[in-house]
Image (cartoon, rainbow, N blue to C red; front, side, top):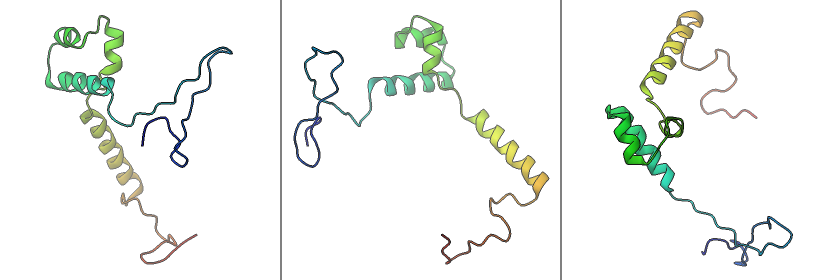
Length: 113
């Protein structure tokens, strides 16, 4: 099916006009990767590898640190470690850390509405 068409009727779908005299533009949808997704992946991988920020900024075309930081997602390991620490704390404080609640009406094979 062509982008910008109604999936049922196949008729073209148009965006709302921005101004009173604007020509209607066909609504476009893209479900794949876009350039910025790849750019973000590159910068995140470069940060994780320990590459020089100055060199990575030159390769990615960023001229300011502020814009570069928007693309540098950061490492997930410290976040995962913080979550594990929280889970351990709750396990010590509350006991069972399996996520189940004792006396819960939901058991294997039963349906609860």
